[in-house]
Amino acid sequence: MDKLRDFLKSWPGRILLILCLSPLALLGIESYFHSGVDPNQIAQVGDASVSLNEYQSAVNNRRSEILENLEDASLLNEDVLHEQVLRGLVDRALLEQQAKKLGMTVSDDTINRLLREEAIFKDENGNFSNDLFATFLRQRGMTKDQLFAEFRNQLSLDQLNASIVGTAIYPMKAINQLIDLQLESRKVWLHRFNWQDYQQQVTVNDADVKAYYEANKKSLKSPAMVDLAYIELTPEMIKVNEVTQQEIDAQYQSFKQELGLSDDRQISQILLTGSDAKARADAIKARLDKGESFAALAKAESDDPSGESGGAIGQFNPAVFGGDAAAVEQALSGLKVNQASKPVKTQFGYQIFMVTSEGSSQVPSLASVRDEMVKRTKAYKQQTLFADKVTAINDLAADGFGIEDIASQENVPLKRIKNYQQDNNTSALSQPAVIKQAFDEFVIQDQSVTTAIDTGKSTVWVQPSRYRPAKTLSLTEATVKITQVLKQQKASALALKAAKDMAAKIKTEADINKQGISFQALGDTNRQSPLLSDKERSLAFSQPAPKNGVAAMASQTEMGATLIVGDAIKTQQQSQLSAIEKAQTAAIIRDNLGQDQLQDYLEYLRVIHKVEVNDANMASAQGR
Image 1 (tube, rainbow, N blue to C red):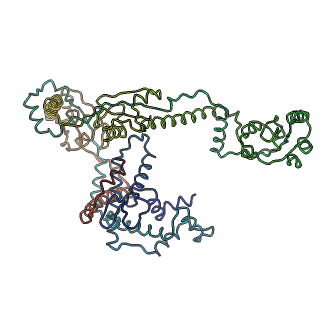
Image 2: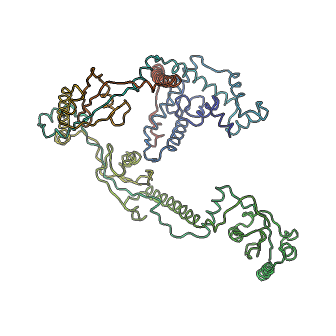
Image 3: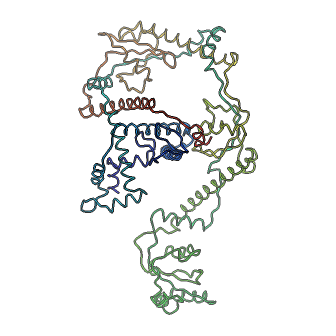
């Protein structure tokens, strides 16, 4: 495992990992590309094509990656996901063609050398092992030629990438200046002027409203809306009061498998068959309780061939006993070495067991973990019943039942939301996945019930009605909204004027306390202070302070206006980064610039290579 981990950190390993696991990495999207033109293509990119299968595979892989790190699955925006995947696949196709055009390739000798250096392919003597290499290929369903072709393709793309990203220039002098800026600090005093404190001083007349409406008519729209009826289901809504012994036994077996535990105690048996089997078993058990030898009784009385060897049958194997396994395991539970069980009726007859030696695994008995297994069984049963109910509701929705009928039949509360908005939705169902389904063209047209939608916290089904598309508001409809906007604008302007007037009166630190308002003293503040907004942080260091004085700065902000007073700007020389840290910072900055250059280069490639997207196949792939 360590070798594999090290391999994945190496260049070949990273390449393979990119090919297999990262369908949206710009230079490693989608595992294996098919040669030739697929008639079911999503896009034609110059001389290459992006196939429907390739696109769908990349979407599924990327979705899985996102969901692994996303607690609420409903927050995944499918439209953005599809858009990003398509762009990534097109970008890769563009770069592949350009790499070939520029003659960027890698020889077999280079690939051989890289592979031979990998520890995962070396034997105990440190030599390259063809057997290990063959096993590696077999496990991944690849041939050597396929692996070499993918490596060659990826390394060629790496060369092209490096030739673009690696050429970004950002002088060290500029980097030092940027670092110094982050180390600057000054004493700061702050006062915020809230626009709401000035709204009584402003008036908005009809002419103002009309002028604003005419200038902004296109953006003044009512959101698309529906009335939404929905049902919501969670596992906790499924009540599980009783569980059977058989269900508990099944969870106990699963519990042991998860822990990698097995009952490896050595056991022996005495088997009694025939019409008098029970009576004989009871009599033998009584003799055992009096101290007679189990092995001797097995040899003399057992009807099983194992009696010849004292009844020894090795480790307990549940498969041997079929449906009786739970009863046998219950009889063995808690037995100590050389202790005989009570007679157990099985498909073979009546059996008495004895543990002859302890195994290496200490398997907890069912009795010792029974409470935990009962909870586990109830949880499992709850999830199973929940899944069954989800399936049942999906079936009813597919059969055309309305949401009210489904709620009644499945005994689930029916809920409603009036004026459910497509944009700026703040309702109880504001998740993108729900909004997408509620405003799906076919769902709205048929007024049908959607399939199950996972919101992360629950599963919901929605049925929209009374669809009202987005439309431009009339002047009358928009008046209230425009009036509020204009009031805020005018009040904010008054707040800014008050802030600037006060700033003009502050020349020294002593002037701060003469203004008749309270300032918040923030003390030494740097450009990363969480006490300031982004706009305020920029304002706080926008002006130097005069000698023996302070700088008073005012600016309009989201809440109205802010007045900031600052003394002389100081640079914390003692906190300067080391040479290594500066070099790392420079590398990050240059890499970011390089990525910008790469995007510019891709835009250039889009101009010289014709890119055509098959909209019909795209819509089909997105389930539209």
